[in-house]
Length: 424
Image (cartoon, rainbow, N blue to C red; front, top):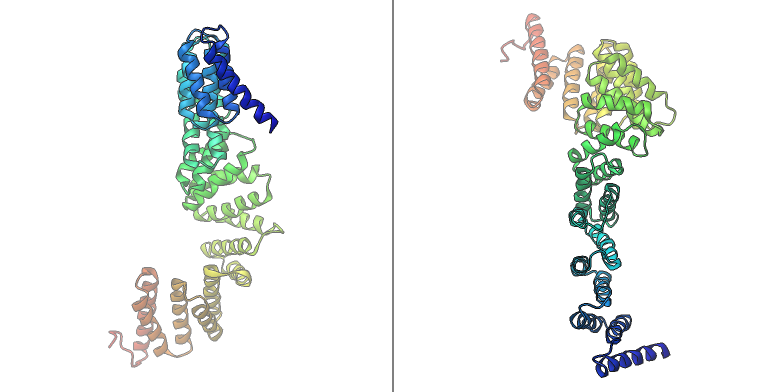
């Protein structure tokens, strides 16, 4: 209480002095001290007005640039950035080469960094002959400006800042981190095509703390676009460079799929076996490996290996992979002439995986073959007619059903059955 009381007394005494001694050589000192005291007392407007009075009445006083600096700092601390900049620029313009001008440039730089407008700062100081600004300082200031926006959650401003940094300093000391942060921001906004070139830039820089994560992201983005041709070279690099086991398994499991897409079945099998050799993989990845072995075996005509692999898939698979495995379970049982158990697999496929319509339709063709083999031509043709009617969006499946239907009718016609080739 006593301190506040003394401050109020000081304000009154300074006002009295300034009023009573208008011609005193100390009057400018009194006004300056009065402005300072009013500001510290929380009387901002009165303090700013007092500084204005000092500037107007004592334009040549050495205290004027100090008063202007104080005014700029008051605006800066109150987050009135544009007014603060105007004051600091006025100090630089009217009192160049002074200590206050140098301080004004330094404080203005902080504001420009806060506002993400370092390029404006650079353009301004370029014309000041008493300030030397090295490229390294601008590099750091431009990066820090973008980074500040990022840390404060201003994502659009941060993106603009990092893009601006990369444009001005493509080989700058903070280029890698700027590309990485920019990629992360775009990726977080779901703009993966915008993120990709920045992740690739970081991934191409060997080593570094962001390289592995960026390499993994490049692979993820290409795989998300089903572009395995583009993904494979990055997946190969990730497998060789990854320090994190999870990333290495990710690379191997997707190389397995990528090589399958390229019809490179030998490498598909190699990588499927690599994946299965990892003791800690989850069932989803294990199921993917078994399905790749099975598909590669089917593609190369190795049905013994395929049948074994599909049995492994059945033990752990879910969703569409399980539907595929059940179809092949029915397929191989049909080939082994186990027609009843083959039908049971088709029924399970229809019951438990009805949402996977194409596999269900393929299963019905197997069921028709089973019924015909069991002597029930009527049931076989009924099922095949159903497939041709209800699965018209699957041209290959309908074609297979029609071919099987024609074969059955031809055979029945030859054995003088009641089913005629023309369908009547």
